[in-house]
Image (cartoon, rainbow, N blue to C red; front, top):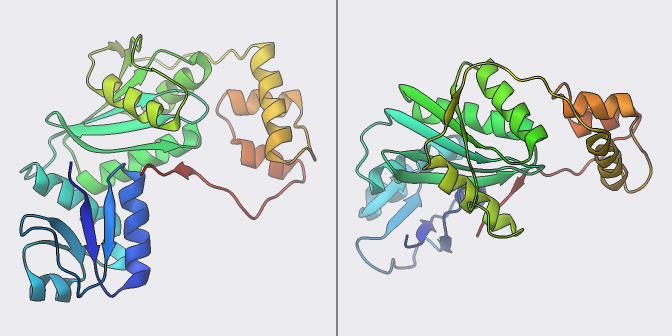
Length: 258
């Protein structure tokens, strides 16, 4: 996929638009409004006034419509009038990878910080594309995170399949998680219709305590009961740390691909 261009004088909108494009794994280039595009076939974003004035394959966007504009561009690039069937593949783990497709075409991918962020992402994609059918395909690795994801998807009444993810992962790079998610999205799996009991091991709980120390800069270790609540999906690490008296003004929920 060739880079898309952001050609606008609205720098606040451009900043948020570049973030959204990176979130989806879409390579982008920022231009000044007076710069020329490489070709007449180049997809680009600008304000409605700029698109009307400059023409070409321009997608109008404002600060309030950034995400929906990116979705419109992806659909336009693949000649998709509407998304009937949305498939979301998830590579489970502490920082899950996600990829979403329609009619076999990749519409976007991202790596997020937690299971809760995956469910928020799914909700935003459903709102953005308004599909008639949603299928969540979850890889069968990382059992604790896998079952949290499956239970969360079922609780939101989505159709869920568990996919054998053997050979979908090829490394530990953050890019590999989204690549694995794309492969998972394209593989048929076994239907899952019932929520699963979450049974964290002692090792799982100790690892969550270790992560709480790292997240708090060594200042706090959550209790085993709090670790169990996180493992079962009842709260996030941030909520557990906050309830223990720790708070941080800096947090990140998405690792952007470039």
